[in-house]
Every structure is written in C-alpha cells, then in structure tokens.
Image (cartoon, rainbow over all chains, first blue to last red; front, side):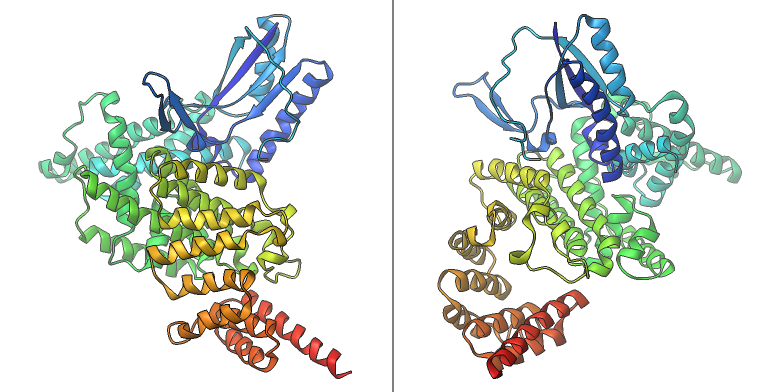
Length: 128
Length: 420
C-alpha cells in the first residue's frame, strides 16, 4: 500500500534554525531516505517553500477567488511530504518514527493513497 | 550549548516577536515585557527538555511570562504594603480566556506594534536597527556590538538610551485604523530593509559578524508577510532581500576583495533563495500595485535570472530604474540607470547622464567608481584615473577601495603594455 507522510511543523521555528541545524536535520533525514530507497520503499518526496510563498485559489466563488498565503492558517504548517510503499500502517508508522527521530518538533500525518500518478518531472526541477 | 537546548533556543527565538508583542500589550512597558519574556524563557529551559516543547510555544511563553510578571507585581505590592492598583490596572483582562488572548487580530497588531516602536522617528537609523535586533530578534548585545564594530558596553548604553527615548514617547497601544496600520507597516518595512543593508554593505572583514543581520532581516520580512499576506510591497521587500542575500557566497574572493556582480561565480548563488524571491515577485505582480521594493526586487530578479553576465536583460533593468526614478527621484537611482544605459547605449551616453549629478553625488564613492569605469571604456584613461582616485578617497570599506585599486592596476598594466 502507498502512504503519504505529510510533514507538519511550525515554519517559524523551522525557518529560525541556523544553517548548521538545518543541514544536520537534512543529513539525518538523508540516512532514513537512503535506507528507504535501498528497500524500494521511497516514492516522490518534497520539501515546500514557506507558506509566505503560497497562493490559494478558492473555488467557492465564480470566478474562483485567489488569496495570498496558505489554505489555512494553522499553528503548524504543511512543509513537505513523502510517498512511501509500506505493507501496513505499522510499517508506515515505523518510518514516521525514524523520520521524527531525525527532526525535532512537529508531526507526521500518515495517509493512505487513493490514486498515484508518478509524473514525468526530472529530479532537480525545483528551485533548490 | 547541548543539541536539545539549541533546538529550544530556535523555538524561543521564533516565538519571541509574538510573545514580547503580547506581553507589551498587557504591561505597556517594554522593560516589564522583556523581563516577563526572559522569565518565561528560563522556565521553558527547565521544563521543555523534560516535557518536550509545547505545541504552541508563543502562547505558552505569553501565559507563563504574564503570570510570572503579575506575581512580581503582587510581591512588590505586599512588600511595600500599599495597594498598587495602578500597577496592575493595565492588565485587567486577567480572566479573559486563553483563546481570546491569542486572537489573530491581536497577534498581528502586537507584532507590528513591537516592530513599530523600534522605528521611532526621533531615533537615528543605527539605533532603530540596534533596538530591533535586540528587542524583536533577540540578538545579544554582544552580537549587535560586533556587527556595529563597537564595544559591548558602548552598545549596551546605546540600546538603553534608545529605550529610554521610546519610553518617554507615546507608544501606540490602541488598535490602529487601516490608514495608520499601513503607515506603520511602511515604517517597519523600511526599518527591516535598514537592518538588511546594514548587514549587506559589510566588507569581508565584517561579513561574518554582520551576515546574521541579513538573515534576521529576511526572517522579519517573512514574519511581516505571514501577518500581512496580501501586501505586494512586503512581498517585494522580502524578495529583494532574498535575491540580494542569495549572492552572498560569491560576493568576496578568497583574499576578501569584493567581487563585482559581473565577475561573480553564479554557480555559488543560493538557488533556494532565488527561487523563493522569484515566487514572491510573481505573487506581488498579480496585485498590479507597483512600489519601490517591488521594482528593486524585479531588478535583482533580472540579474538572478541571467545565467551569465552577457545574458543580463539590461534594457529591462534600464526600464525598471526609469520606473523607480519616476516613483522616488534620486540622483543615486539615476546613477544606477546610467550603468544600465552604458550597457545598452554605450558609455558616452551614460557619462552624459551622470555629469549633471556631480554636485549632488560629489561625496559618493559609487559616483566616481561609475564615472571612472565609463571614462575607461571611452579610452579617456587620465580622467578615469582621477575619478578612481576620488573613489578610493571616498571608499567606505577596504573592499571598496581594493576593488577600485584593481581597476587602476588594470589601467597601469594597459599603459605599460602600450608603452612596451
């Protein structure tokens, strides 16, 4: 079964990390990513720019309303997600635990996938 | 600092503007608000490592800080055995429920107020910057003193004086109306940009001490954008800072000399920051409410988008400087437009454009640097050398002087080559 791991954290806190702290988190996460990739369990995964770069299109008006900022104002924001291939929820929770250990604060929402389109975009197509 | 404490420190830093902003609203006194916040931080450092940080760090700090400060007020009241109702009359909403206290509207105005009091018009720019770094960003006096190249005691005194000055002034506690809010926002945006330029104009020798100023300014820009998500000028300001700071890794060579934009190794530019800056400009453009920060960020974006200096859209840059000139006429902007003109229409036209600026910019390093470069391109070496000599005399940093000396060396080398 494919699961999405939705990564939530306070972006104010995450974007207050020093470069060293950020690099350290990414390096620790990298270890988990590598293991998942070796086991062919890692699907497309991404990290989002801060919600200040977000724009929301609301469909409750015609034409749809375009609003600056994220869909919802929350204490913790959606900062990225993974798609992982796991046998069951227990295994997906295990992955989330490993990622959580690498990464202070926040929460992971584990959500089974209904549809998966792998897409055709090349790696490195994002800004970074 | 242990690793746990470093993470807690980051959480405290990110919650600081909101927490101090709210405490300032309760106590109406900056020192009390800061002390309350400090006390809350001390308690956080004791309790968070065991219990884990709370989900909403700012609310926790506001609650704990507020209670600690109220205890202090009550203790003092008992000691003097006099009813000190005056001291607590400003905090009569003690019983209001938590949810109301952290109401979104308050949250925005609290942060804006906290930043706004740092831009008091009576404070000189350097004091505004120092105050914002201390109060809003929470940098230590030592860090700020390093950035300004002064001793810690001198900086402590400067901050104390600045605080005393704003304590005497009317601090605007009532919720601002729309016009006032937008005036405050403009003043705060300018102060944030001052913090940024203070960091950005550092030479190599001070870059390490001042680099954090750029990062703090970007953090403040994002914070403003989070509380005012639909303000195109705040998008422009944040984009401008991101696009300029993206070049930081390429701005100095191994010897510490400034590297001109056209000579920079563009592979060193920070692509994440450029991407975020471009995304913000995209968003701002949709509003069709141009402003100076947006235009400046659009200029920075044209540089950022060029893979090599030869790919630079100089005609676009010239047009944008023209737009900026129309918005806020200034000889410095004309000088910048002339640099673009020198690329699109040649140095003769650029030189003619800047000649009338000689009076206004007679003490400005960049004026003589640009004049020298135009003259050099026109083959008027002797006059170029004179202009460069003036530029060196006016240089603000060793890096600026070194850069001009490089151009003079080139002149000398050319002259020698011609002589031999």
